[in-house]
Picture (cartoon, rainbow, N blue to C red):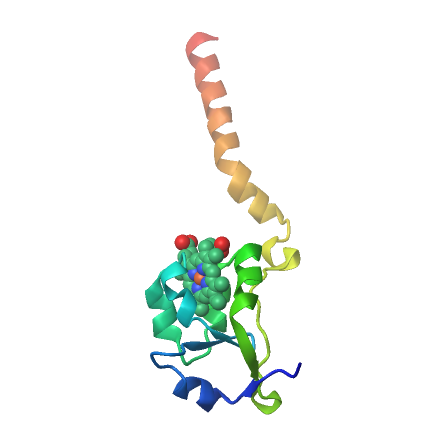
Amino acid sequence: MSVHKYTRAEVAARDNNKQNLIIIDNVVYDVAAFLEDHPGGTEVLVDNAGSDASECFHEVGHSEIAIEWRNTFKVGEIVDEEKLEVKCKQPSAAESAEPLTLGGLLAVYGPPVAMAVLAYLLYTFLFG
Ligand code: HEM
């Protein structure tokens, strides 16, 4: 079965009472039947109908279940010449982990160690 191809202008034009087309990752979904059932609410879908909601969809961090469910509403794809790069926000381990530096270590462990030393000195001064 061939996939129906939409231009972005066509998707925008089909945002009406019968169809609420939305683009996520170059795939076109009709969310009209799903508006009331969306756990994230009707409004976000209505607001994004007719446009590309990929960024919003990924920002929310939708679950695997949501991504599976999404397929139920697929009605087509964006024409090849209007496809955009799919940007999924998945922070890589390399990006999130900061390199270990002496300054960083001191900033984290410095204050509690200094407090412990001070407490020890005070204790020996008072009771030693
Ligand atoms: C066909 C497309 C979509 C499906 C099947 C879907 C499905 C879901 C599901 C199952 C949840 C519950 C949480 C989870 O399991 O991740 C959810 C939450 C949510 N969704 Fe969607 N969603 C779709 C599109 C969108 C779009 C396009 C947006 C934004 C423009 C959006 C915004 C939200 C928000 C804000 C929540 C609430 C998150 C929270 O409570 O933390 N969704 N969606």
